[in-house]
Length: 491
Ligand code: AHR
Image 1 (cartoon, helix red, strand yellow):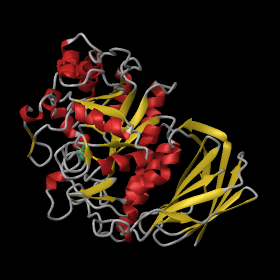
Image 2 (cartoon, rainbow, N blue to C red; image 1 turned 90 degrees about the vertical axis):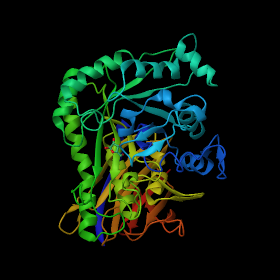
Image 3 (cartoon, rainbow, N blue to C red; image 1 turned 45 degrees about the horizontal axis):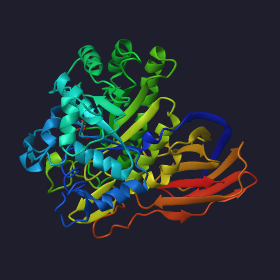
Image 4 (cartoon, protein in one colour; image 1 turned 180 degrees about the vertical axis):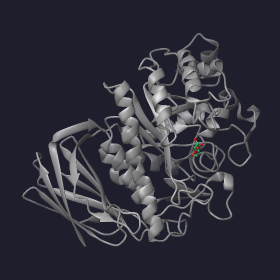
């Protein structure tokens, strides 16, 4: 057992935690959209307009605030007009990025907006800059948001939707330094300025235009974007960083097979997110001290070798308590950087990479990662407050901070989230709460061996349970077991 001292000062309010930090990502990749989210109206699986009811319910439970679609790499070869109109006559394509399978475009714009409507979340579209045209993207915006009177708005009406939808988040391209066109930052910045000029605000809709940002530690990309794009051009830059346990993309490591060394190296690699955000923020601060351009981490999570026997192009992987700790650490990092980080999107929502949910036919399993989003949901829309934690270390070769934490206030309630990253030691936490009068404390926990996971035969192996904490004279005490994620509520 290791002793940990903490101090929370509720008088020190740091920044607003945008609900969108708890956002997600759904790509036409493997079984994320088809079978995972969308089964079609004729399926035996209970659905609403083809969208699985169990998915809608699960997304609503964690208050999923924003969903990014249709990719990823897929976005830069997606032509939206293929996905509207009569399903039987929709054009088919080959999904060349992800397994070379046939995409029948039965899930398109109308289906995506219906999904967002049912879940109650903001849609976030990634537009095609890599292989599309300005006209194509500008007409997509017109189709979605213009009330009436133009060829595109009339086409939407003909396809059964009279009222325009609201569209806030529009990404212009995806990974344009890689699968989205292998562009140099200077070239992308110029192209971005042209594209965004023709993505207009129609019928009272206001777009929040997002530029493709850097891959991991490509600080030059951020520098060039900030030099060339002003707040008039863009509201945010994206950042992509994946946690690869071995650090070797050709042999990333398996989802459920790892020893303590690899476990700690996974957590250490995930904590690198903090340095990345800090350094990109430093660059952004130089050009934008008023904080008018946000950072959006719209792809993050663990990327392992695919499960044996599955299509390598489908990126299907299991999800254990190790992933839960990874998710908890990242969400605490995003909260702590919420002055600049205004959105984040885990990759991906269903059946792909560090998924919230796995499906097999009609069965659905909530992963440990899903439960972390459930534990953390009360941070959404809260005010981040000062939270200090003593620097006890855990780990074998890679020493990491043992505890990851953050705290926020909303409607007179304080939420504190903690992860004990050690797989060996419990943490004896003593936390001084200042500037917030409270008399009631309750907590929930997710814990288990780092390898424990939920599967179709044992879907409730890892679930949230109640957790005993005590509050005396403004001091919160708790004993966190190894490999655990806890959410404390103080009133
Ligand atoms: O999430 C899987 C892929 O990872 C996305 O399509 C791409 O943007 C990234 O490289």
